[in-house]
Image 1: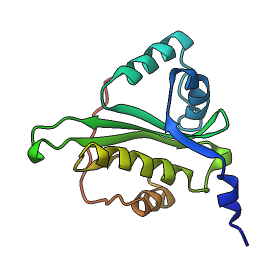
Image 2: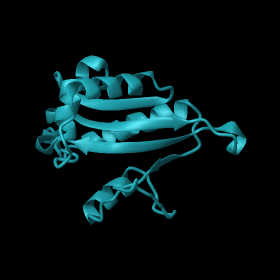
Image 3: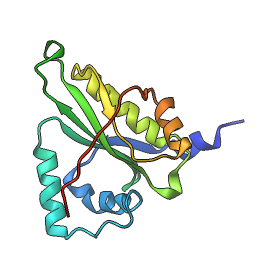
Image 4: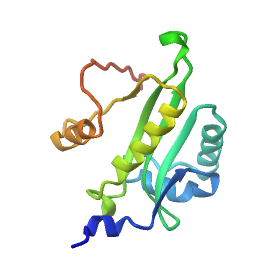
Length: 157
């Protein structure tokens, strides 16, 4: 019997975001941080233009038709250690609530890993604020190990 989840994702395309994808990307990001203020469209266009022009920065997304349904941001960072091999950072991992538990985020992450390995990155890092065991298990199942201590500092209010 065919896998229903595989059938659900048969027409899904994974590719880097383009400027024309901004409205659907912003709608998807509401599933990441619903409490975030809605960005002014002019500011959002400016920020996406910066992202698209930034060397080494890519937003990969899974699309169901024209609708972005899962995405991650990958940043490849040049480096002067590890023989000059760059490293990568992943941020803003999100899947639309209606499309979760179908393997989409893992597929988008694997696309990002392949992109990083093609650029000779020696590692890919990800931080999560989630304490949810299912989320942590998901990242472990994608190949991440939880063997370092992460720190952050946020700008004072």
